Amino acid sequence: MHELSMADAMIKTVIEVAEKNDAQEITEVSIELGEMTLLNPEQLKFMIEVLSEDTLLEGAEIIIETIPLEIKCQSCGYSGKTSSDELDHYAPIINCPECESMELEIITGRECNVKSIKIEKSDENAQDS
Ligand SMILES: [Zn+2]
Image 1 (cartoon, helix red, strand yellow):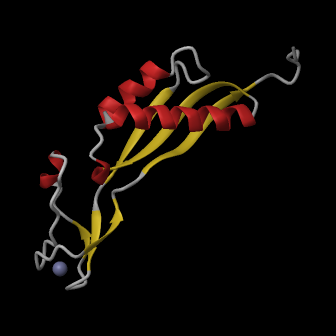
Image 2: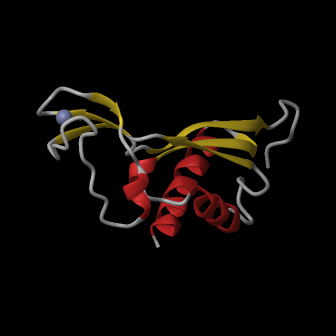
């Protein structure tokens, strides 16, 4: 269950940032998720929603942006997108679309980051307990 541990880690990060910024509530979280992570965005979103119950994050809008896989070929110098048809299983084989070399540098597609969060700050007049 990759999604579960990822969701858990992301929630911790988001809540930590929110608390440092005196957030009263988190309204929106944007996440970048690379294709190469093989995580299911819907599943990740669902996990985050479930795990954020009773936290500052509860009720926040979760936006997941999928980052396509882009590679750079070490053999022929091709760089760009490659077919991600092979990425549906857990042992993806990626070849250069030009020369079929497997010596590739992955440029994008491994992202799994919290990109931004939106928070509601507490009212300046609110009492500090
Ligand atoms: Zn190549």
